[in-house]
Figure 1 (cartoon, rainbow, N blue to C red):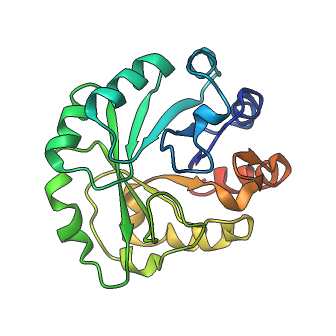
Figure 2: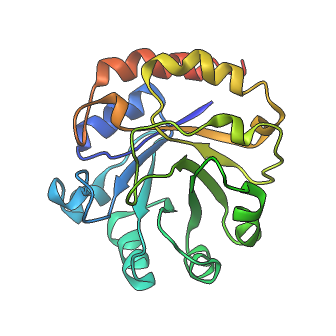
Length: 215
């Protein structure tokens, strides 16, 4: 199983993740986030990050198209995660240039197939997260049961308050038919010492457990 660690703010920690075999490092380009990467790292430093297998993901919220595309070039991003209210047309403009992950914040009453249908032919991947008062992560889980039995029809990231004790629950989740499209686990705040500073010891325990899923 692949892993994305989001909210990165340090070259050193990204390279440590790379050594662990983590596939994706997320950098948040949303100024209202406590993990807004430009508070910690300039563009040239982000661009210089080169790991053996880790890919840089830029997380944006309702940013102008031109700004997103410029940041992709300036920071050497491999994927763009759109975490706001971006329309299908907006996503299409970005997807013509770079691989797009469209995030959806889920509530109990959501009709998920209806929510994602207009993005099926546009986004390359989806991400499912928890609905909160604002944009970005909440550190809370949504009800994974909402996804059970669905045919997402697109690779997706599972996000939303995943913590070090969730490895067993994730194993159970992968037994459901919906998990045939599960592309990666996405973790963030439950593996932090402070916003943007990861607890590497927790990750060193968790990552091998997740890597064993499906083997």
